Structure formats: C-alpha cells, structure tokens
Image 1: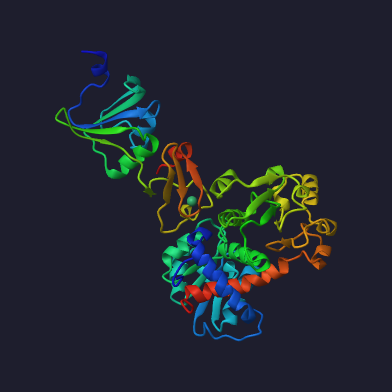
Image 2: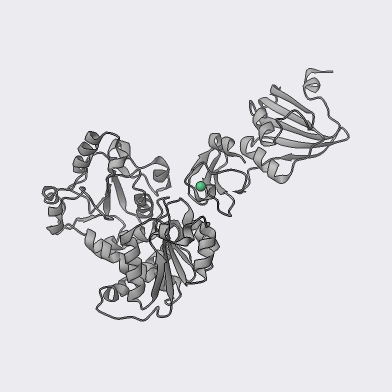
Length: 305
Length: 154
Ligand SMILES: [Zn+2]
C-alpha cells in the first residue's frame, strides 16, 4: 500500500494508510525493544541527511533501521561535508539517491522535503523542514494515544504551550480533529494557534488561556516548549513559562487515566517530579518513535505490504 | 461620436483588455512589462462607467498576449476580458480565468521557502479560493492573498 511512497506531510497519508502504519508499528514493538531480532531490511540502505541537527530524530530513525537489519549512511553536520559547499539540495539528493534505498531529510528551509521528494526516485521521509511538517512525529504522537486508550475519537486532548511557533503541533491538531478527537488549545495570548491552522481543522477547537480550565477532565495533556527567544522581555518570558508549567501538584487533580505527553526535549514546562507520577508518558512516547519509524521504513521499502 | 466610443477609441491591431477592476489598469501594464518610454502605443481609461459599475480599460497597439500573460492578468483582474483586434475588428474575445495550478508566475512571499533559493525549481501554487484570491505554496504551504500576489508576480 505504501511501497515507494514519499512521506512529506501528514496530509499525504490517507486514514487507511495511517492505520496500516499503526498496525505494523504494533508488531514492531518487541523488535524495537530488542526482545526479538529481525533481518527484514537486510541489504537495504537508509540515508539520513540532517542539514540541521536533531539528534533525537536521527537516532530514532537509525535505531529503527538497525533493528530491522538494515544499514545507515548520512551526515548530521553539513558544514563538515563537501556536499553543502554551494551545491544545490537537488544535486545532493540526486547523488545520495544513487547510494541508498530510502532518504530521511531534515532541513532548515521550508518546503525542502517536498523538493527532495521530487528529485529522488526512492522514497523520501521528511524529518522536519522548517515548515512545521514533521509527519513521523505526528504519527508517533497519535500512536502513543492509541496505545494508551485504544482510540483517539472522543478523547479530550489539550495542546498546551507555544501553539504559534511550535509548529509540529499544527499538523497534530489538524490530524487529531480529523480522527474525531475533542481538541482544546491552551496558550498565552501571544502564542495562539494561527487562524489558518484552525481553518484546516475538521471542527472548531475550544480555546483557553489557563491550564486550570482543562485540568480536571482532559485525557491527554500534550505540552510543548515555550522558547525564550519568542519573548523580547525576559521577565515576561519567566512569567509565561511559569504559568504554563505542569507541576506535580497539578497531576493530583487530573483524571486517573490521564496522560502527559511532550515531544522532547523539555526545559521547564514539566517539573522533573512529574516524571515519577503515573501520568508521565513522554519517555514512552519517545520510545514509540522507533517502532513507528520501523513500520514506515518497512512499508515504503516494500518489505511489508 | 458618443462619450463611450471616445473613451474606447478603436485601434487597428492589438489587444483591448476590458472590465479591469477599477484602479488596476496600471498594475496590468506593469505585469505586462509596459512601463518604459518605447514600444507599443498604449491607451488607458480609468474609472469608466460600464454596465456593471466603474472599470478600467487598457488598449495596446500591435501587441499580442501569450498564455502566461493572460494567466497573470487573471490573478490581478479576474473579471477582465481580452479582445484581440485585427484590422479594427474584434477577432477573438476571451474571459480570463484563474488557472488551477500556478507555476512560475508568482514568487513565494516566504523568504525561507526553498523555491526562493538557488534550486532548479519553479514556484508552484494551488488555488484555495478564486474570489477572494488565496494561493497556497506547494512547497512551504504559505498562503498568499491577492494583495500579496500582486506584489509577487514575476
Ligand atoms: Zn513557498
């Protein structure tokens, strides 16, 4: 179903294709945990082209490929390679395409992954291209919710923090609304979700300014990082960061089955004490990135139908 | 000679672009690259009272339009009609229409868009809405309104 397919934006995938990825990802869990061995992608080469650093995403893809018996080539510091010295992205992609079977690309410029997909014959997977599209992150976020609750429709999901610049949260909000979730948006007034994203959603989300408004009845708290650079005034940043922090005390008021997610790395948005509560799910979420990426690699390479 | 014919005086050969939204005639000339002191004779009438309210009219002698130019006109003057005149007669008349896919004629306004780099690609937009005009970059996803589009026609 997905053989040869580029995954540039979450909207490139139908709901059926997403469900296929999730069902394969579920089967991949024991292999991702190292409990079972696999040679499914033996002889296949993944190229990871990271034109800007994102250690977590790169390691997660590389782990996924190695767990399935495949090999990895690539770079994570373009400054040290000759590839980047004045060469166009199109030329780099054409070259690397001939060295590998699938390409994962991360690039600071918006739309770079779409361009890469046009110049590569092999499948291209977008690992973030500045435009906020980071489809494998969106998939692993949804997969985490499915693993926890068995479904996404009807869940009350609160997206918290920087909803304006924290752009992977944009495609997540749109995807969740199409899957029937009850999406709530909680952010400081200056970091609200842009109107064009809300327009794309299947139905109007509810908008709040305080976590307290959703604290007692959310199923999922999806927390994002509020970056200091967004605030010219450090005092203002401190104030905002403080009022959008999940504390241990807050977790006591949450529903018993509620979970807290975060795409990581976190700074101050979640108190370290929260890690030891039964609500914390962000490390599990990061782990799920591996089986989800294993599923994507196996499917686009045609090793699994 | 009535007032109307005076304003829309006949030309021998060339094109007449009629039903341009009021005030847009100068923009039409600009995207057709007619701004210098030489070339075709151009007559322009602005704020002419037409059947459907005021409009602008542009006439350019001894000039033809290619498809790309007609598409550009559609983006800034979607109500316009283009009349081709040969030997004082209108031999062809067509309404412009906004194409579904807009390739290479508008520059993406997002400076961080990959199409604004030294890459071997043309810009490309999908039309989200014709009226009001909203284009979406196929690469970076940035949406552009008519006001932005007018500033960005290549
Ligand atoms: Zn663009």
